[in-house]
Length: 370
Image 1 (cartoon, rainbow, N blue to C red):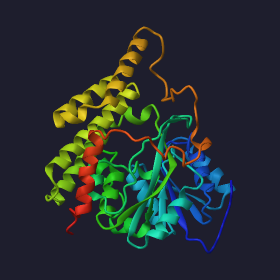
Image 2: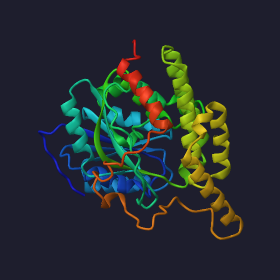
Image 3: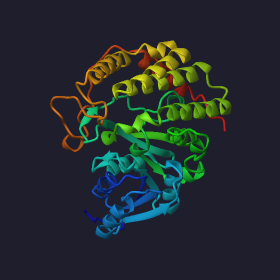
């Protein structure tokens, strides 16, 4: 691993929470260690792993003095990240889930934007690509480069893509009390990122390093056991926001719940979780019927039916990881982070129109008052 150091550069603390991730954590540490930003520390928080995770990290630490290992009893991702924040020595923190990927210029490009943005910039996020268990690209979601005051947009949907996509000013994390562990205690998890991002975006502006710098890994087990907890967690956060900010229009929360259920339904069907996807589709219809009018859901439903028929007739096994179905497989680290930024113009759909409404609320400065 590279072992760069530059005393003149601002220190960035990379926090890697991991639970039973011995198969991925070494690669995560490598992604952090190979960053072109010259001054980083790597804090791996072992969240009560029962596999060889700790041994793997110790081997990494023996090769690279920037790597530190913290042990704790299993408390969930929020508690693990908070332990990393408390131990961090840098003024900026970047989170990396153990199964996700980074381009080697991620922190450098984000720090450039952060420093250019000034003291009122709390978060710099980047674009992300969805990848399979081998790192092959499944798709590269493309949204407008949302920046500035983005609170209403973030209520509608989490365009930042997750914890591994952000660089955060540590001061901001301390001000909001870090990540909320009560979601797990209340039987829900999955919206810890969104809750923290919302809290910071109430007080600070958000900027984008407009490149595909993060690979969000989809694994076969990532949705099956936690999907309804993820939906419940998001609903808890939305209720908190609505109680805190009654001046936000009610339709924004209906849209947000419908869009979230629709997205989870589409992803469940795409991963072959047929019954789960249909249950979420039914919930989408009850919350916001327009959110169910989704071509992606229709395509995923068709694929799900096809996969189920193949399983029934013994043509394939349903016990398989998520894999890219493209004939010409391209892996995350093999392509430029600029590729895919230029998209062909298309007719705006319902998602675009709703996001435009939320963007206008942001421009109008609706919320916060505190």
